[in-house]
Length: 94
Image (cartoon, rainbow, N blue to C red; front, side, top):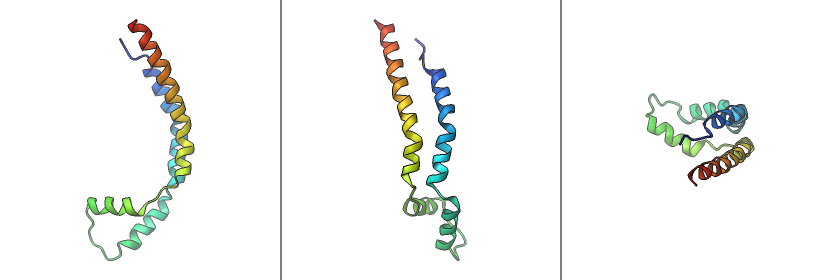
């Protein structure tokens, strides 16, 4: 039996893509992050990928309000889609 919601999954992703992208842009101020990176690494000639990850984990704090506002409608659509698709699949098993 084929998963009935594949097309709907793609449509939901497309529907919410712009909202999520804007949420991430508002949650993270890229210019501020770059400025803080350069100020914290003055005089450093090389940085490993792991050092950059460690710095990011401790130094970058997103404004979660924008992410939550962007993701709530997606979660709601996903819940409805999962419920309806699950019911459809269960009817097919009976």
